[in-house]
Image 1 (cartoon, rainbow, N blue to C red):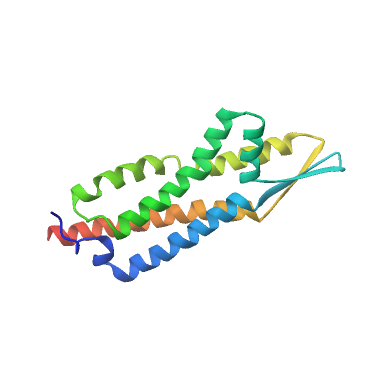
Image 2: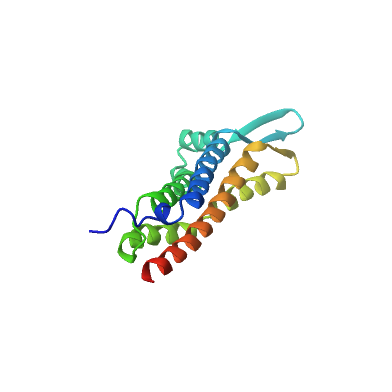
Length: 173
């Protein structure tokens, strides 16, 4: 049975505390990005509609657009949240040895390949609306919070990976 003193936070307590703080900030930013307004669409200079990711998903459900609802919900809400959870587990709970980190590391790599798809979905939504000649779009703070959360997960993932390599070198030595 692996020692409980072989977790990443046992090797690097200060750095993992900073990572944990970044994870909390990242989850808050992600939730703000989901619920804060992403944009306001003005059509014909008269009609206006402010949209958040959550309200957009609600509209997709109301319109029974299940495929889009699942794709956007999965890649823009569920996978980013799962990435934060996996990073927290890898940092605080799982032993550094190869067998302990194998499963969370495997899932993190799979999710990491899709990490920019959520930003791409929001960007496509904005571009598609801007392409309409009779519509004007104003971007709101939800977009910035959402993008900051995605970028923060990328930075934190690289940081955790670097610490994991250092910890394995220490353990092997």
